[in-house]
Image 1 (cartoon, helix red, strand yellow):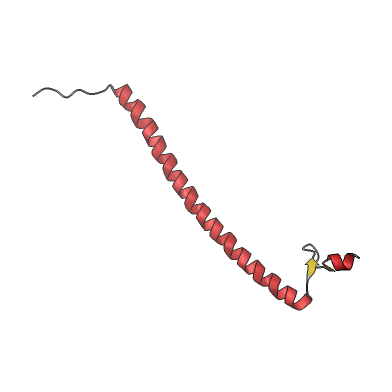
Image 2 (spheres, rainbow, N blue to C red):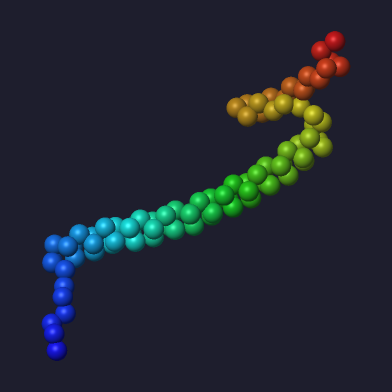
Length: 83
């Protein structure tokens, strides 16, 4: 039986190393996408909560701007109030 031909150790190394790096990068991208999905879900939940809180405050105080530094309320100017 004839001996199977092989590539050199250097040629094999030149294939294996980039292949391993590529697999590592693909795995990292998958991890990042999973983290991104989790963060986007968290953003969605925070936005829902914020919208609920805004609706409660608008029901209590009407349409006003709220200064997020000191809680001061100011009326929202409309075209009718600017006249």
